[in-house]
Image (cartoon, rainbow, N blue to C red):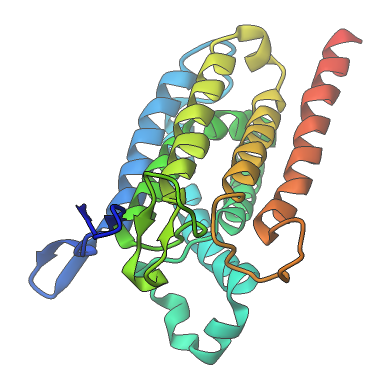
Length: 269
């Protein structure tokens, strides 16, 4: 990145297309999702080999297909309904243009939850048996997705004067927090480390739902912190004490606490 006369970095003109194969354009955004799913899949396969081994390899492989559908449908519908309903209702054809970016985590989470619920019923597997495994691999995809947001020059941060601020031309001439990278660190790297350390403890793995609760709490805290530096996508007013992203994290924290405490009390009974 080059620096402008003020000394701040100017976001480079990245080509969002990573590879062109004839009429087919493969974008960095799509590659981040593909890489996140594949790496998360690989990590989760390692996890299911540890005791108590409630899920078979072939069952988890089949679940991944359901999860991919849940991510795409839920993430896109979440973006449309939670973040920019007015825009997409004015431009309905863009709803299906997922290659341009625009996937909401909270919507994707709902899509994955539904996928695990219906697949679990079909295979007679407990919902939290599946969600505990998936939760441990999810931060990998979150990290890569945030890096892709940075490459796309989207979802930038608030105006700031910190030395590492970046000028995103699409956001105007003011230097801003590279909040996408903050989120990659908090929601990706640090959350992955938390889940990895937690999943190494057999007593936690045996209490189904505990890993899911830890993930919900960890993500909600990480997202709430990053929202301090991120330009809000939904304007709640200049005097709003919280952002829409932080509000959506409140039920995640509450349900996560319930899972962790409930499973702990159940194990002690």
